[in-house]
Length: 221
View 1 (cartoon, rainbow, N blue to C red):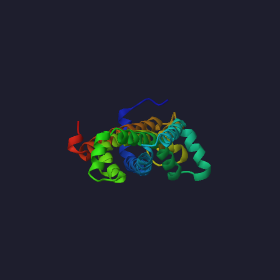
View 2: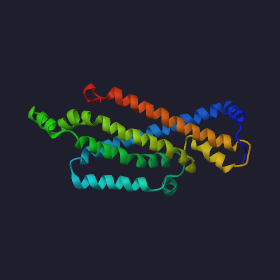
View 3: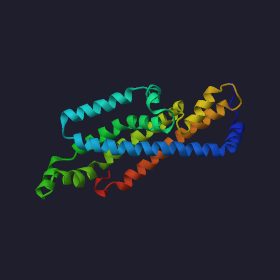
View 4: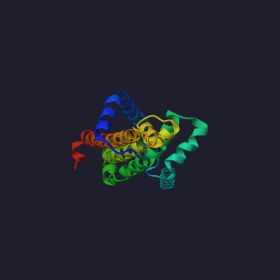
C-alpha cells in the first residue's frame, strides 16, 4: 500500500480542487433534500400518532426496523426498482432519517405538560390550534435534536451511496478503495473521509445555532 505523503496530498487537493468542491456540493445537496423530505414525513406522522398508543408504537417500530437494515443491503434492494444515482440514494437516506425525527416529535409533543394544554383549551383553542400554537413550539427543540441526529446519520450513509452511483464524497472513498496500491489511492480515500467528517462537524454546529435561534427565549436552557 502507498505510504502517506502530506505534500502529495496537498498537491492532490490543489489539482483536484474543482472535483472536490463539486462532490461536497453534491453531498450537501442530497443530504439537504433527504432531510427536508424526512422532516415533512416524520414530523407529520409524529403529529398524527403522538397520542395514539397502537399507531405510535407501530410507526416507531417500523422506522426502527428500517434503521437496522445494513446500508449496502438497502441500496442494493432499491436498484432493481429505482436504478442508480440520486433516486435510490434519497429514498434510502429518508428511510434512515425517519426514526430519530418521528421518535423525537412524539417525545416532544408528549412531554408538553397537560396543565399547559388544559389552559390553552380553557382559552377557547381547539385540538389542532393547541397542537400547532402550543405543543409544537414547546416541542421544537426536541424535534430539532432528532433532525440533528438524522443529519449526522445521513451524512455518513450518503458516502456509502456511491455504491449505487450516488452523489457525494463517497465517490472518492470508493475510488480510493478500488485502486489500492496506486499512487493516489490513499489520497482519494482520505479526501473523501475527511470531507465527510468535516461536513458532519459543520452541519452539527449549524444545527446547534439553528436550535438556539429558533427556540423561544423562555424555553432555552
